[in-house]
Image 1 (cartoon, rainbow, N blue to C red):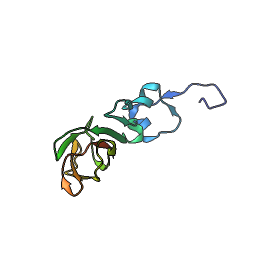
Image 2 (cartoon, helix red, strand yellow; image 1 turned 30 degrees about the vertical axis):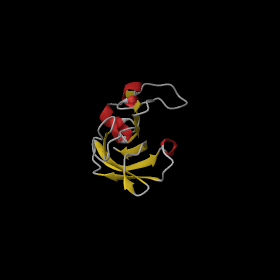
Image 3 (cartoon, rainbow, N blue to C red; image 1 turned 90 degrees about the vertical axis):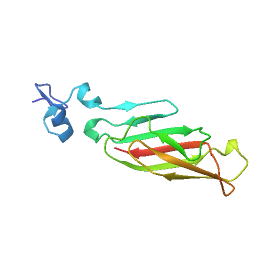
Image 4 (spheres, rainbow, N blue to C red; image 1 turned 60 degrees about the vertical axis):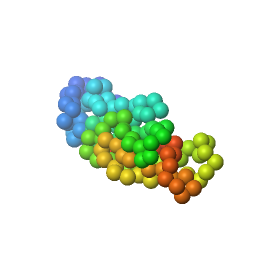
Length: 131
């Protein structure tokens, strides 16, 4: 058996063994990266590999003039969306802006904005966490 200091023969781990953390088996890059995604777009997501539970962080910018605005995630959370947080883009208005989240699902949410106590569209950023 190979160790970190002794050369030897090792058995390649299957994806199921990698996910379970089986000892004395070593994965290839394919098993390590399985399911991993790191997007760099303005509306994109990070997904950890399968053996790390496929945890995801998604982000985007709402530029819709509809209120409420339906926001669709870049990709659907397979199991659950834990949380969505929003930040108004105050550079687009001199008014006080607030954003409320409604109807959160695994595929998106409703962005409901208000300016100076009146229902109105509000631009801004959002981030969602789930798996």
